[in-house]
Image (tube, rainbow over all chains, first blue to last red; front, top):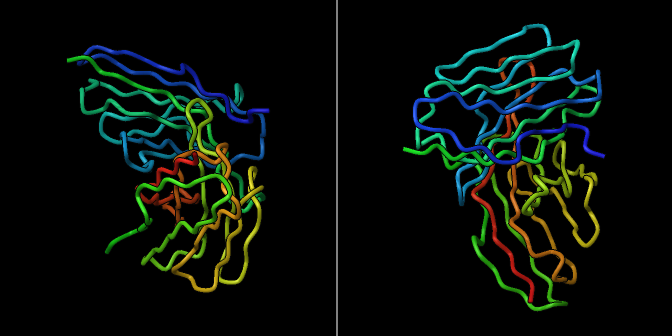
Length: 113
Length: 115
């Protein structure tokens, strides 16, 4: 049973376009929602994170949109670049679960030049 | 500041062999964990530790042991390797972020093949 469902599994975007990756969760106790970026041969790295008391967080070209009522959150990559080609993971955690991350299955993003 | 260091980077084992994957961090993080990553299955938690002397099982602990004698080190032992344990293994340590959650610093991984 996947507690955090991520879509799409793969995504191809043209350079300069907007990449959108979506995640949905079931557990309303989750209170921390990070996104991780993983390049081939490397470990995942924290990209951006949000808490449920805000609806949007922006860091450079990366934005998290959060919809608490729908239990959904998404990553938007504006002006996508070939260097953004990587696998992206969403995750969720709650203080009651020792803050162990519950991971989505990942989205492989390819940005064509 | 090396972060999280994993060794070896690559390993081939025969079925039934045992080995230890090493993980060390120099950031004084209390929380450490081991994941395996398989195609299409994301990251699955094997074992984790909330501090020296304290370990607990994740979602896929069978066939693996851990110990945490120091804050810095968190080795993962494969007791009797099986082909199903062919995977990429990541060690991570975590820290509190400004948003109130935990950020994870991952090692670069160990690619293990069991033949």
